[in-house]
Image (cartoon, rainbow, N blue to C red; front, side):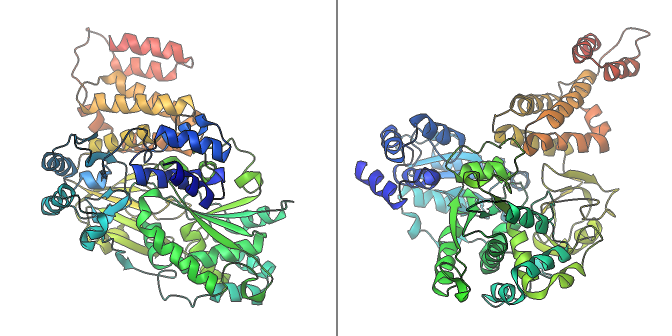
Length: 592
């Protein structure tokens, strides 16, 4: 072990910023992070042992206790539950002879749940030793169990288990013909860096990760910061349940994404870039590394790119199972080898990002769009979309539809158009933008996908009328409680309380006072949380409670009141009380 750790640290230049990469290698070899490894790494990387311990405890893919030689995780996303996940994971456990959440006595296999695996178009999905397995059925589970019991190495398993389809159903501006490799970089230098930035601004391109910040402004502000080094980061940590577009883009259009990063780096003056790849996308890692190697050989990365005197290279960093790292400052913390705790802002990353240097963090789809804009110009892109939402948006469509997969539309498309195209019928509602987004009812299908109406990072989950709204809210509330980083009290405590309050109502133990308490709790979490996770964690409750109050009411216990007691009037009094303690006391009286 000492030799292995020493060689591993040396391969990573003894850099503490590469702690996640080092720990992933240790985990893969020993099936956990041994105490001896922590002690040795602390000494060799010159960081406190407690820091390493904190990182291990923060990320769900790291363990301080041994896992099985085959560590199987089954996705617990709502789309997996919709195809019978509970029955199938119980079947898996029975066949393997192991309890969910435990390691089998012989140490060969462990089985547990994980949050969304990014395979929502190919559910039921999961991971085995970090590699994606899709379209799980009882017959496929039987084959996996046989392989595990034979202790057959993964590279000897049928490749069919690890087959991940792109499922591109509808393409548009970006998911069309593959640009010639190097075309965006050549066009940028031929046109000029300032002029290319002008084209990006003219295009109206806004961030495709969800927030929608103007890309050209972000690059301009980063460039204008006085610094000896700047960085470009591609955020490929799409952890939002129901979102898998970045997985598809990187699998088929990685060259264009890397070109977009290179164009951005030239414009802002960065010499180093990173792609922070979601831990669940381990299956893409070697392929992306091979593409980077090819680009270096073609002089599209590295020193003096295309003889223009410009140096730039890209390094891949794999996450380790933390939804919060999709938030850009938490991502930067993780990239520095730390727990992914969101930073206080300001300063923003364009001023003080990676290693406190000016840093531009952009989404995978944003870089794909930027590369195409560099080639075809801003007007070409801006000719599509709406006044405030230019170009196209790539959507991950899943749930109750005939054709789940990837769809690209100009901004301004109606929800109904998307439903028609993917073969959805008898639709109850759609979750737009994932759990942190908005649930819309079947009265709102003429609404448009655009920043000025329904903004989205790309997740589009469809539910038909056989689904129960509260089952959806129940799954989402558990997801946020599990994924809270624990940094701030409103989110750490609030999401846990919200989960328990939803559980109480779903299980039929709630009363009228619980609905008021639920709304109050949602507002506390939304208004006082430190980062976007907490600020949106209550959205599943708020957006469904607004549209389906009768569903919540129907789950409440029937309570008899004293003659003359006006419940509605009493609850309205509670809502108006400015002092939270007074409101709580009043609610206690109401419930009694």
